[in-house]
Image (cartoon, rainbow, N blue to C red; front, side, top):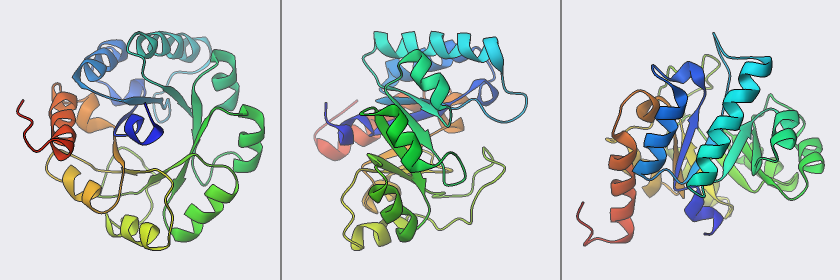
Length: 216
């Protein structure tokens, strides 16, 4: 499967995003059609040390059962320890160039909020970009100004062809707007982690854009 296809329905989650066992949440999401998973254990009260490692191992095993890439957010040491499929970093996280050097050929995702950040991330070795926030979200406390799907259009207009994933406040009723603006996929946190059944509905929505005759 090509990277653009793997990024179509990108689930980002940590224990703080779940109101039940994260293992159950991830299994249901993957059964529903999630195509990539990012382990993001941040915020209060997130797990640390051995507890974080054990959860990461369990979630990675679940991803492997579904042949879905397991990405680690902003923790190169953990990604290397687990031999994860890749790492995702934000603009305020580790040095992008150094992360690329350390992880070698593993996938490197970088968050970008404008054309300038997108170009810099690509120059430093990003394989794909997480662009946002698309809409208002309460999942991240340090959210940037909401530019909306229009920022995707600006990045595409600038000639950037690297895979793009929209993130931030994406739900069933606005996911199509993100795709239409130029994203190859959507990244979702709470809309999937806290609402059972959403992954399958989003997967069907995305599938329908490839196959107009598709009926659930």
